[in-house]
Image (cartoon, rainbow, N blue to C red; front, side, top):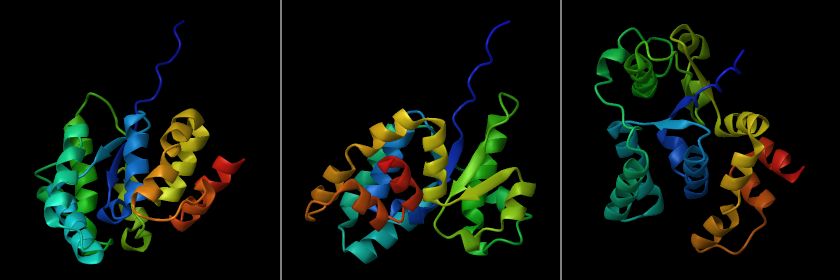
Length: 198
């Protein structure tokens, strides 16, 4: 009897708010590159991130556009389109976030019969997503800290590898050097910090 095949990596829709922090964004993208999850986003999510980043950071739009292009080149399967139809029927979550849920529903539908995918939404704005509504649609929603901690328990080496450059990422932003634990606390990744320090 052959061993069961490992479960495929889950699809995770990255809400624009989790892309705002450069440190967290780079950590998540490295985690995806290590095969822990497959990112999903839409042009609307990318536009929301770039617009807010330009406003809050004062970052030139062309630099943000280049970052977005690089993300799409690194993850050519991440982009989900034609999601509008999947907003129909959503009612209990914040209407401004229907498009984020719809991206996950579109990805589930696109997988068809090839596999029954695990699709989740990662966001800091948990209150805007009605968990019962998502679960009825076959989705779930978690904060970055909860999701990263779960992945750590399932595959510590991949997460440790993704964490290694975090201190360099922080300094590259023009900040004074800081220990990894302190950086993770600044990023509100308290569970992950505790696991990494153990």
